[in-house]
Length: 311
Image 1 (spheres, rainbow, N blue to C red):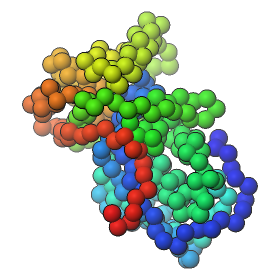
Image 2 (image 1 turned 90 degrees about the horizontal axis):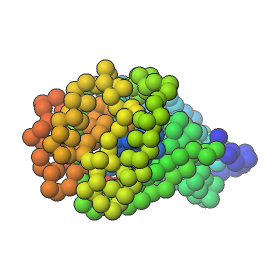
Image 3 (image 1 turned 180 degrees about the horizontal axis):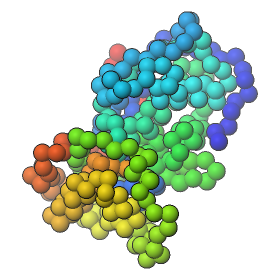
Image 4 (image 1 turned 120 degrees about the vertical axis):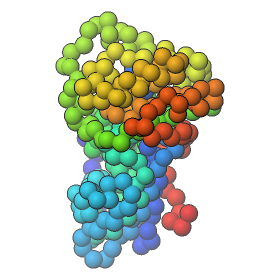
């Protein structure tokens, strides 16, 4: 649990604040619930404290027709949790979100909402960075999300390794400059809870050893030698076990890998991520059918950032 600051009187900023949060891809093949990668696809969030009580939420883009527009919105819930950690709640606040990260596709939309909400709340409090330092942000975000892999990549940027030791912990490494993430996003969504529900409670010792070796190799492949990525992104623990929920995505993973392109399910799926280099990035589009939208991205190395409102 994230430590709570004793109840105190906070000074809230009168001007709005804006946070930009990146999409993320977790697991990257073998490193289930531990590896993450921040991507250059963003949600933009703006919030301002109001004198009137209550919470208002304006939404554009992804989820505009489905998401709640009150305190139940995940960004708003995360702001409330962060204000609570810092010691007091404002009378009210207004939130505006411009969502570009697809929902239910395994690209970390919930982690972006959680981290974005926490950073919005912190930025709205004078001295917020002292009351809720970066390690506290990661701990609270991990608590709200339930695991630290995506929130770590969202917060820190780059290629992250996350683990839990009491609270969420993480380190961020800079990926090799030659790596080009290409995401293949299907038109249909998949709930993370459903995808996780398909995983077995136990695994074979040989399969666990297989993934441990690939996960260790993944660190070297991502940071030093991308030629190892095809081997390093192989998995035996979680992808095929979820085939019934995303057969087309796993067929695409197999097709890309047969062509020598390192590919894996992104997070809980059903998006497929290909960790390409310039030598093979252009090949992905020709191998993907009409059921997927293909986007060549870059690795975001900054993570979630507070940016000027007028930028």
